[in-house]
Length: 322
Image 1: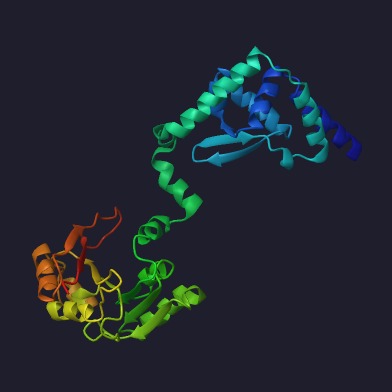
Image 2: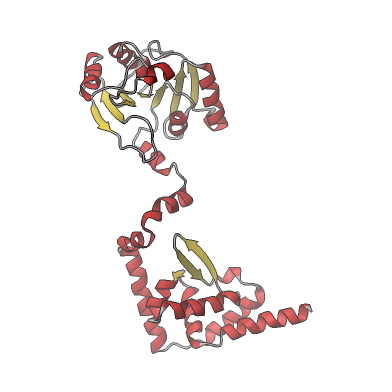
């Protein structure tokens, strides 16, 4: 039974090689992974015909395929073949003579690869709205945020004021020298410690404290961020001055970032979340920075997420005028 199964495998493989077009396809697919459409462009054949040839080669074990978005890519990888198949292909490949057809195959292949390299619109046209999913699958969902954080100096000490469960501290930890995560709630700090775990053991220092009385020495941090914390504070100017106190600009820092809610009318937030303010206007944000000794803040209204149910958010960043 084993001998018969081996015999069938060999004959199937040899049968798949009996067509000259399939041989030419394998010759190119050993050098370059190609999609069905790209193979069709090289050989000037309908995609349905190309798909049948590739299916025959795949079933015989000559090809491997990889799904990328809506496209399927095929390749012949010598190291992935078993010993017998490798030996057969090496012999067969050596017997494929150069001809006008193989020269044309090579010329068209070079054109396909050039299009792939230079025409990015071709790629994004193929994947369209699937690109976010493809990017996340390849690189993870945090890659954009982590990449942007590389704009922050790698040797800065950053205070994360009102750190909550540590989502900002977690991102910052791998991009700056050290992070001081501060929150008035020990429960929140415990959640942040659990979230960051051993990865942040050397770079994140957790401290209990409030935005109105920060557990920080004067001029001890290069930057401070404050996410969704200002609505809980009575005096905005006082809180902003307290954020300024530990800032130093000796290392190019002295920057404060505030992300919070724009002015809204959801009065239930006062009862449900203890908010003392219903968001802020641009004028109020500018005033709070000015009174605390900062330069004119850069304020951006953040685009809303399609499924987000809360009010709009703003991001405001300013540097001390020392």
